[in-house]
Image 1 (tube, rainbow, N blue to C red):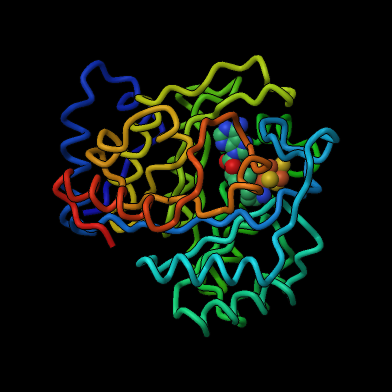
Image 2: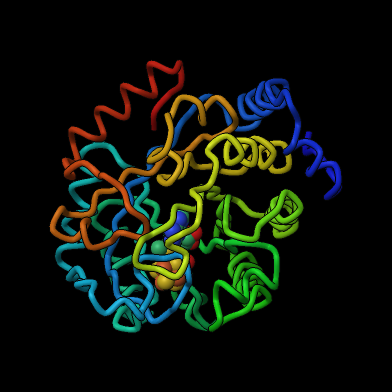
Length: 320
Ligand code: SAM
Ligand code: SF4
């Protein structure tokens, strides 16, 4: 059932005049491979400290004007318990690359959350040495999200002068070897990107192969070097999600937050996505975790969960 495409075929598909048949095919593959369930994940942004300099991101370390925060372990566990109480079964702990959150501290947090709630725990805290990923896996971490961002090594280098694509992909392969459900993904619309790059992005997801893939539009942040960039096209982003579904039928594919900022959930769900994330970060911190400009509503964990469940049911799908 898993489709095989060459780079050239993917470029041709991405540029098609009429993409409707591919959306329909992706939706059918989604229904057959993972069913009608839409998994709702709680996303908690535990720290906006970051040592990296990614050219697109509002949390990059050179931003000295940004107030920085770190949630305390008590605040993190309390937010996790609140999410669990209203029905969440997975929590994603995301942060900049913040050395304060050592593997020991993160491991204790994972253990505490699992003991108190039984939820699956996903980490998205950036690149680490193999031994740290191994330690966190031992501590009970189920999944890890680390987007490869772009499969073009030169573009990767320009956007991340402190790292290489090779290093990023090596981290993903390590996570996979250690038995994590491994998530990668990329941004659509990065300056200098072409359809050829997107085809390579999709093939990279398939080659890992990823268990999850977050594909979202690039959104320029005014306090970054990419401030004058053009926002990524939602339609092209949805096309990438649909093709990812054909390449990876059983993968968990979120309608990424960046896409829902620009468009409507219903559209992306009809093209192959089966996951959505909802921020549960307390308001006082949420405003400081601005990776790209977004008018986000105040956090109300029970009300937002209920609203999302209703939206999903209205689309004829089953929230979980
Ligand atoms: N620090 C970790 C990392 O980079 O893997 C996790 C947190 S980082 C903020 C999460 C994701 O935000 C990145 O993987 C990147 O794709 C996305 N991101 C950052 N800046 C963005 C922007 N301007 N537009 C769209 N996505 C962006
Ligand atoms: Fe830091 Fe992640 Fe932003 Fe890069 S994308 S600056 S690693 S938070």
